Image (cartoon, rainbow, N blue to C red; front, side, top):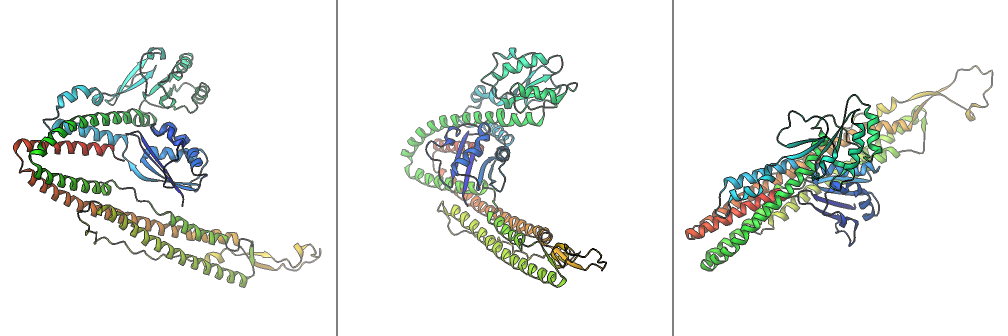
Length: 537
């Protein structure tokens, strides 16, 4: 099955794309947007991928935040592209802006409370406190400032857009309050705002007085150049808060990451020089420490894979296997409209049920094969990651068993089909055209079954049973995936603890000053690891 992958990290402003496992060609359309927020060009994603994949009918795996994932799905829906045409799945979820913001706060707190002689928190805070403590600006053009503003946003009210002439409005939510008295001023203000280069339409919101005709005002806003007006009921409307998360908070996280990177680079430059001097004095001890540090880094990298693993993806072949059976059921005798006669109906029902049962047997066999192969793939891929450090190649989870699949029970079909039998008047000649006008004999009634009803009935009976079986397979595999990954993670954690203790024992052989230097290195490693937590996909 052909596939594409879209990986977007809004906090690093990085985008990576694969088309059938290959990087985009030189001069690909995607090159224009790789360093831009996905939200700025998500509406172009269907067209770009259509051109690169030579049409639709492919799997699209997305790595990124949940809001961005939903935006990608909506971009295809807006173009009338169904889930059957492009099957989009969230391969790996990147934490949302609120979670990342808390991680940034946690790292600042760690820097404040975990002292190190190479880092002066007071100097750091004096230079950066405005960024880390500042609230997000929120501009209101007319209207009333809410009484409960909270600490997240800093509200600024102005009478008109001219007052904002020298204000940087980049990624600032702007709310227009519109009532009957200020409608002419609103037209002028909106025109001024739309002409600014530091404003995008996504940051404009409109609060309409309840005394006005909302539909009419919305049409006016559209006519003035805002195709999809965001009309809100209050200043903390969900759409406003979503904008704040997606833009100013995300940009704050991006700035914080760069600040942390600069600090790490500055301290690292100093330690590189001091470490070289120390290595000359204690070459053998540092050789052991370097070997242990290398082993620790390899173990941590492998462990990171099991901690931040991809979301388990249900094999698409399950859907294909199900669809094969459904098509067999729906196409049975599809060139024939009905069956007449009691014996003929009973024989046809028997044949149909026989076909359905054989189809179910093949379905179960194919599902069982895919079920087993998927579990084996999980084992194989996790094992490959685990043995990469080359420290312990013998370990393998042994106490995790993939559950056996339960047999499925099909409800009674034969009786349901026969219940659909109706009785119609028999016609012994061509459409009854030659029936004698004075013929008063009783009409002959013939048992009749319409095959479209049969096919629909069997699908209604079978489909829920098939879906339930597939759901159980998916749940079992997902749980197996999580348990195996957790088992590897627990074992790697033990190995990391052991290597850390070995490193501490070797480090104890150093002099006091060199031990302090080693503590500096360890502190910087912890700093770097916490930053990587914020940065990681």
